[in-house]
Image (cartoon, rainbow, N blue to C red; front, side, top):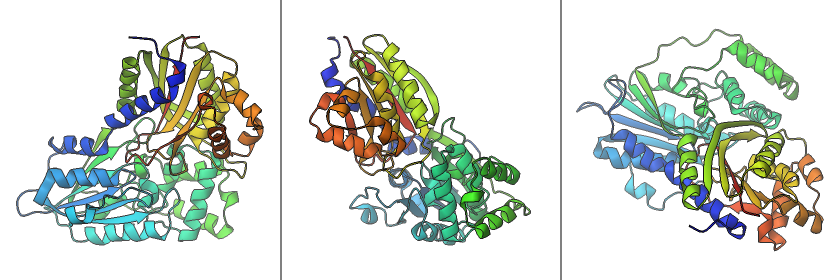
Length: 442
């Protein structure tokens, strides 16, 4: 096999990215899981005469629900799908699956559509009996899409925006939300009672903590109310809220917890970042690289991770591909637009300047790096020089969190070897982000 060429780096990255997505296809993952018996007796397909209900929530809710309906056939009684308003909806969804009601809702900050969709779930589950089974299909984005906040909606939105801007991890974010939202932290189990609950989960959380994915609607809380309060203080969130909102949150976190029992339940992970990264490594090997999967636990500030990734890249041997995964955070300081992956790649670019030929891509597996239609960005050893040529200031751009405008301008500059945005429709899956580093021969 001939050695990979730098001028083909964009196609190499796309090939590797698409291979990763194929390994975590939500439709296939759910069908395969449902072909196996449930791990906990009583949470699988109900006996004749009983009913099977479905709740699918998240960015991958449509393909997951389609898979369940195709696998279960007329055993499925009724279901609700809640997904992002920007999701691709098959034209024949309502005709093919009349038992499934689709609700489009807001993400990453809930709005009235999210609350209305969740109320529909609550109303549907009032009809369950002890002989029934509720099948829940959970994927990334569920926290915003499936919500019944214990605050007013404006206060809930204010809290979520403050947490998003704080740079806190998704673990912190969801440990807080679990205690301020009725459906989170096992709340969906209580709604489904007395029916048994089987949940299939597509992980978008580093480490695959099931209590954090989607804020754990079918999993007991990951933290105590006191710990949630401490996290809010650690990130100085109370100071960013209206005094009445802060008082209400503190009252909720010091009140007696709900103590109703859970029905029988079973939670099963069906796809995660490790599967995607392993497929990415295999595809990179097929393209002629010596490929390694280093870690699936990248987290922290996007700028710092960008500098770390650049150091890995310049030290890599020729013809090596490095695959990493995780999810960066961005502490918003400026007024610009961008996403964590675009910012990570931009932070790496100056450190790649003048080095060996290489490409570094930071990509969201859901195809949306905060901006619909943009999965992330590619930086190369030519990015910084091209930016200077067309008058772009990387330092100022990072300070203003305006990475999207930077990469747009670079795309428009007409130099394809200098990197740029990776444009992609929403993928229908979500298992965190991928970092792909390709080092070429000098």
